[in-house]
Each structure stands twice: as structure tokens, then as C-alpha cells.
Image (cartoon, rainbow, N blue to C red):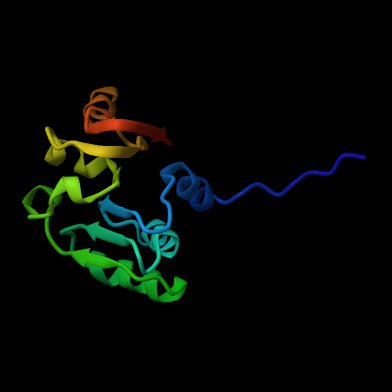
Length: 138
């Protein structure tokens, strides 16, 4: 007899789509505390997970998620376009809807685009940031 397997949470699916590996550097543009914390657990002490968001309260939400998961994260409180982070220093970038236009022309080795709330033009623009690997979710 066949049984039904409980489906993974959307968070686990998003983490799998990001494809982060131990020791990699990942930047999350736009605060998503639970996803960033899950990525931080994967990249571990030898990797780096940086969340960039200038919204009020974003740092507290991300830090709470990291503390809850036991993950090590860095937080940069600034609009993603205003940061001095070097795009070449990251293996993967996670681009969320609000950050598409601010990262026009920046290229990352791998990009995960969360297309929820994006127009087709915004999805295309975010996808153009990928040098080698592109994953579109949502």
C-alpha cells in the first residue's frame, strides 16, 4: 500500500533551491530571517551568510531568526544598492522582489530569484544578474 509523505515546508524548499553548500558565501538581498538562518546553518563557520536590508526592524527580525536556529549571520543595515559589499565575494545571491532594480548591472556567480510579487520584467532583470547558475522560485 502506498502512503502519503508529508510535504516539505516552503522554507525547506526555498533552502534546497538556493543550493548553498558548507563553506560558501551567500548574500540575501532583503530580509528573510528564517531563510537566511537556514542558509547560515548550511554555510557554517567556514562560510558566510550576509543579509542586506535597510528596512526598519529588519535587523531584529533576522537576528531573532538566527538566534532561534542557532545560526551565524552578518547583517548590513542599508539599502542593497548602497552597500560596499563586493559581489564577486559571494558564491550565491538571493534576490527578493524589492531589491531587483537596485541590483541592476551587478553580476553574481549564482542567483536565486524569488519571483513572488515580481513582474516579468523584474524577473528578467534579476535573472540577468546570474553569471553561471540561475534558479527561479515562487
